Image (cartoon, one colour):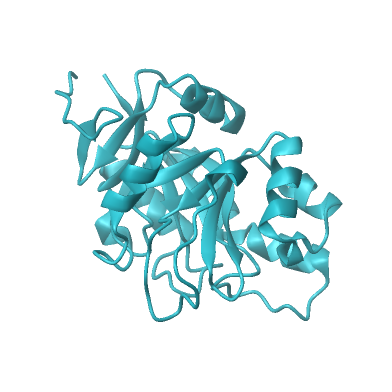
Length: 244
């Protein structure tokens, strides 16, 4: 038996590019047979709905909206919901999924959206966070710089990004990067913006994840299987027979 988790998900409460609310995403993933989701809305330096004119506390409160709405619906339906975000290097140079940090961390570190990648990486990892380079080789109109992965500043890489701007993600290059640097954690994510696409990506474990800390411990232990195009695979992307 596998427990499935979406690792890369956007809600319309916070991400300008998303079409569905946190609650709608929860219902879609419950129907798709998932155990949990990580809400990773765009951070203030990304494609975010939140005004930069607000105070830092007001911005943080609003950033939590998609997650909070998803969490409440998840409690009703029995789907675990965890908090994260997608940090963007401006002007839209690269994106980094950030896990195992919370609202208190954000309130204690105002305006971290202005940090360089070096500064941000050091702060996140010092405080127990996990940093994953999302779609490291994506090319798109809104990305103003050519891909420039810096594996020494992250803990892992999204080797499979299922939907957004596909096939410009160039996942094969992300796989190549991960194989070149064996210490990097490998994850898959749908990068979902529309609930009708639920179930295509994420990671799976043989056991249920208790919280965000448990999640990153499980990743570091090498216990994650990758969900690619709706199929559970090993860390090399080879399909595994799911036993119910």
